[in-house]
Amino acid sequence: MDLKSGRPFWPIKNGPLGHYFPLEQDVDCEVAIVGAGVTGALVAYYLTKEGIHTIIVDRREVGTGSTSATTGLLQYEVDTPLFELMGRVGETKAVRSYHLCLEAIYGIEQLVHELGDACDFERKESLYLASCRSDVETLQREYGVRTRIGIRLELLGREALRESFQLDYPAALLSSDGGQIDAYRLTHALLRAASKSGLQVYDQTEISNHRAGKNGAELVTKQRKRIRARKIVFANGYEIPAGLRKDIVQLKSTYALASTPCERLPAKLTQCLIWETARPYFYMRTTQDGRVLIGGEDDDFDNPKRRDARVPRKSKKLVKRFETMFPEVDLTVDSSWAGTFGETQDGLAYIGETEKCPHSYFALGYGGNGITYSLIAAQIIRELYTGRPNPNAEVFGFDR
Ligand SMILES: Cc1cc2nc3c(=O)[nH]c(=O)nc-3n(C[C@H](O)[C@H](O)[C@H](O)COP(=O)(O)OP(=O)(O)OC[C@H]3O[C@@H](n4cnc5c(N)ncnc54)[C@H](O)[C@@H]3O)c2cc1C
Image (cartoon, rainbow, N blue to C red; front, side, top):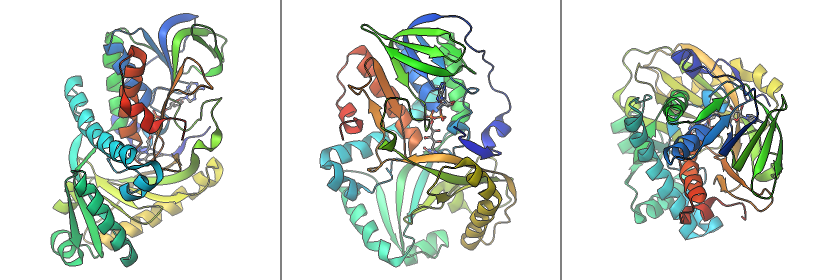
């Protein structure tokens, strides 16, 4: 599958961060992870920290799947508003998912401290704009349910938005809890740290077959090497693992760009992640060196050829939209790209086990807040493997 096109920003910004080799012999381990993006790297880090002998493989170079294409916003907001999610999955699961995603932002902050590499992590506020007047009521309802469960939030009206942000929108929710990260760098930092504790990393190693046995499972690579493990973790991202229903996720195309460093960015723009109620939504954030990352313009297809051809046009549209909001900023595009992106019906990730695939765990963080899901997946899988109880697994289970 062709996951991305154009020039994703992170590999260019960071340059080479790590160098790994393909698997060239049969190996045994306790846990084998398929996929060395940010999700697989987090799972590998947590398992290795527990002293579990883990191997991770990727058909690409480490971090060069969707992880290299992300814009790196860390949001606790699931794609489905909380009040709506409550109606779909019940209050307990909906509230739990919002709380878990919120905790995940600070979990990532703690992790980068532990790694000794900030990976450009920054706390940010999150400004969620009502795209039109008819969405104001939605924001009011959402404000009510979120504040009731203890989330720090302000509801801003048109006047307040004009005064504080010089933005002309009918209303917005301003959340105190948000963040941003260089997920590509984080992936490399996690794998580097875990390698020191015994993790084996193999890239350019494609898994072409998978067999479950009585006491474990076996992966077979395209080069016919075998990996025998007690458990397999599928962290394949949007390349849906074999054996799962393809319709658990709707694949789409999404577009993004990074500007060159801008002079004089408005302070409010640098403090916030900005996004909106319209679907697909337009969003933006800044970087520490004064760039603006902008994304959106999603298409309801994932045909790479069609997607690739649209990158220049979509990039122009994103710039135009930015200029209407911040006419005082002179924006020059440095790189623009597109990527496959996936959404589930309820906006929740798929994490954990399914009877259909014995000896396997899945870490599929589909949705706009995919990176916070990656951390939750790593924690759930660690608990499942070590046999500790984890009530969160049922929130993201396959039986829904
Ligand atoms: C343009 C864009 C913007 C985004 N912005 C955000 C954002 O702001 N915030 C956010 O949270 N999320 C965002 N996302 C989503 C985010 O990028 C993903 O949730 C995240 O990168 C998924 O990481 P992953 O490790 O699960 O997947 P990946 O990074 O794709 O890693 C999966 C890996 O599995 C490997 N693999 C697959 N099949 C096999 C096989 N058979 N054998 C071996 N290896 C295999 C692939 O090569 C790949 O490297 C964005 C996505 C896009 C495209």
